[in-house]
Length: 126
Image (cartoon, rainbow, N blue to C red; front, top):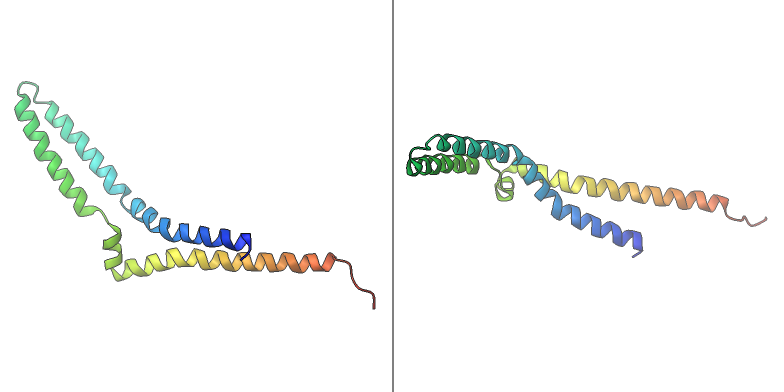
């Protein structure tokens, strides 16, 4: 196996492992931002109870637990994606598609460059 092929195998494995994680992080970005806004609101509302710190802490705990429940309900894990048939198909195409396309493009490019190089090499006289 040549060095380029080894590099291709390593990059393919890295893509196959990293791509699903990237899709999960990207899918959950909106849920994470909503969770952060919800916690900021809970902090702001609980800060209004300056006269009763215990009541403010109680309000914050109640609101933050609701924020966490909403966050967990709206996130997508890799296992949830794999449980859904559409998610399986998406992951299969999103992972396998680029790997196949890049291997084909790499093979075509290398074959073409070698063909061009042979055209410029010294020819044998007839």
